Image 1: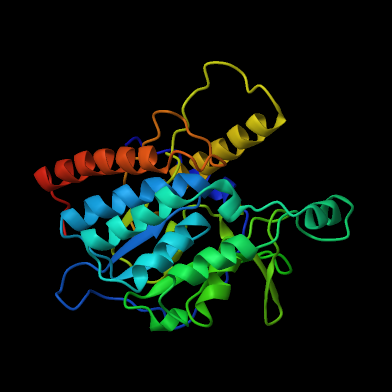
Image 2 (image 1 turned 90 degrees about the vertical axis):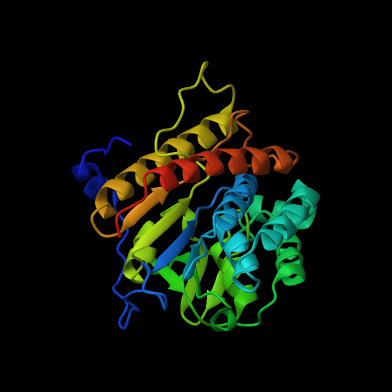
Length: 308
């Protein structure tokens, strides 16, 4: 991959992130590099991460820690309390294939009107997301996870990213996935937390801060966004494409910035049909594409192993 200008990384990093004391560092119990999986946000595109996880497990690659935000927070929380095996990836695949848009974004006229008239801070209740997360989470608190779990949110009051590593798991997942203005923010002490993906959709920086030496990045958009054959047709398409470009630019900048801090393996964000993040009807297609592309990438890595 061609590295972008490192100066771009500085220009794009507009969010301050206070250092955390006592970060764990060093190698895993086997002496191998301490490995993190970083799971990006992307709404329905989070389904492709299921294929990536399966490919990683097929190759015997398991994380020493998991970092996720938005849809990636949901996936990370699911696997963190289960064995790091192909069977777990298959179980997660069944969940994604059963999902429909209304399961995540149920329309409630009263909430919608309240949001549009500035009587509420959001348009959609979190009842669907809360029900989904509660059904599949197997831990009460983040620190109970079998694999250390770190979920990235954003504090609207201070303008800081927040890495949640302890406390109630359900509320942490809801906070890390609370799209501002769409879903309700989550109060945690004196913080008002929303989806971390709005400022750092692929939180490599947190994995580095937590001491990871090898980082497998599971994105939902590649560092180089594909060109559009035609201009966006409407306002929603234009907004989605603009956000896609921003995500790709931030990812490219972070890959350049942290290339010397850890071994970075960015798996392909395979979406040949250009399925939109709001379309939950094609999870099987995304899972299959993610699996095939990750298998190819990991096979190439095995052929040319990373230096320890």
